[in-house]
Image (tube, rainbow, N blue to C red; front, side, top):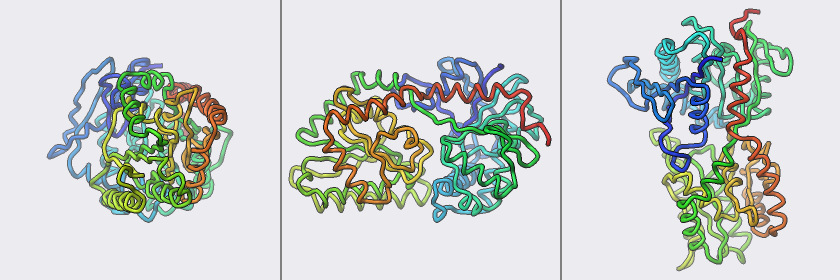
Length: 466
C-alpha cells in the first residue's frame, strides 16, 4: 500500500510520551502514521479573518502534520453549530437538545468542501485516506467531486442513532448518501451498525449483499464493527510511573478508612453525570451505615463552553453536588468531591488504581475508553469493581462489570452497594475476564484491522456503479 492519510476535525500533535495529557487514540494514530508513513490533516483550532486554504506543514516526532485555519463563521456554523448543536445531541439520543439552523448546515457543507480542496493536493495515487468522526461525513463526496479515486475509509467514534431518531434530522437522506462515497464505513459496535442498516433498508430500500456489504444509491459500501480499545501495556507502564504512584499515594491518604468511588468524564450531557449524582445520592439515602465509609470523586473538565447546553449542565451539577454535600456532609467529611479540571493520563492512572469502584454511566456512548483504562490500571491482587452503563459501547465487551441502567437511581445505588461489599475473590475473578478483553482488543489491533480492511479494497467499491 501507499501512504496513510488521516483526516480528523482537529489534529493532536504527538508531543511528549504516553504519560502526558495526549490521549490514547491520538497516540495510536500517530503510531500508524509512523508505521505506514503519511500525513495527519485537520483544523488547526485557530481562526483567521478570512479562509485562505493555506496549509501549515510540520514534522513532529516522525509524524507529518498538515493543518489549516478556519474563519470565525466556519467555527461557529460548522463546529459549534452543525457538529455540536445538531449532530452530537441527535446521535446521542437527545433530539430535544438538537438545533436545526440552515446556516449550520451550510457551514458544515462549506467546511467539508474547504477541507477537501485543501487536502486534495496532498493525496498521491496509491494513498489510503482514513476520515474520522461525525464532523466530516460529507468529506468523501467532496473528494470524489475533485476526482479522488483512492480508497476512502470513515470511522464513526460516536453512536449511530436509531432509525426513528435519524429521520428527525432535516436532509438526513443527503447526509447518509454522502457516506456511500466512502469505500469502508466502520462503527464501534454491531448495534450501531445494525441501526445504520435499518435506516438504509427502511428509508432508502437498500439491500444487504452479504455480511460486510450494503448496496444503496447505486453504490456498494463495505461496513463493519471495529470496537476501539486502549494500549493496555502502555497503561500498565503509566500506572507504575512515579507521577501515577504519587497520585495514588495522595488519593490513598485522603481516603484512609474509606473506599473511593471515581468517575472521569468530559463535562457533557451524554455522560449521565446528573443521573450518576442522583444514583449516588440514592445510595447515601439507602445505606446510612455506609455513608462515612465512601468518598465519590467526579472529575469533569469543561468542554464546548460556547454551547448553551454545556453551560446549563455545569450549573445543574454544581447545584446537585452542593445539595448532596449540604444534606450528608459532616465537619470532617464531604461525600462528593466534584472537580472541573483536566489531569494527565498518568495522574488519572493513579486515581483509577486507588478507587474501589469505577463509576462509568453514560446515557449513550460510542465506546467509552475510561472504562477500559480503569480496568487496565487495577492492582491484579486487589482490583476494584467497574460499574458500567448498558448504553456504553464498552458494555458489549466488558460483560463482567456490574451493568446498570443509568436512568435508574435505584440500579446505581444497588450496584454501588454490591461493588463495595464484593469480596476479594469475586473482584479478582471478574477483573481477570475484563482485563483479558482489554489486553486483547487493543487500540493497535483496532487501527490495523481498519487499515487492513481499507487496503484490501481494490478497486475502491464506492466508485463502482450499480
